[in-house]
Length: 131
Image (cartoon, rainbow, N blue to C red; front, side):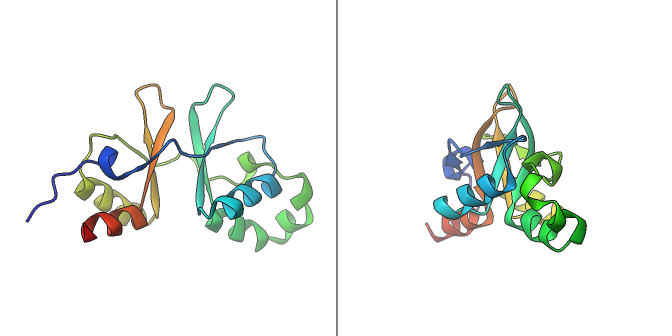
């Protein structure tokens, strides 16, 4: 049986985002307190410019130069860019293929104006298959 649901039906809507100027400590606190593993990074106009994931933070901590400068680092200095995006009207199969091809755990769902409207994660996909 083929799943005809769309990304918009399964995504987590209204994602928490962070600006590129936010500190890494602030971003890590947001991830931890909200029990999430990634954040869309937006500019001052709310337009998506990247993604910050726990993996980005781990990679930064593994780099001695970045560790030495940790207190002064901003999200924009270590985020993954550009962010991988998908439309709310895309199929779940398209989302799964894109995640596999790029070896990522989440895609940012964006509006026509390139602002984040949702996140679809590998966890969302697995939950959708159980329903």
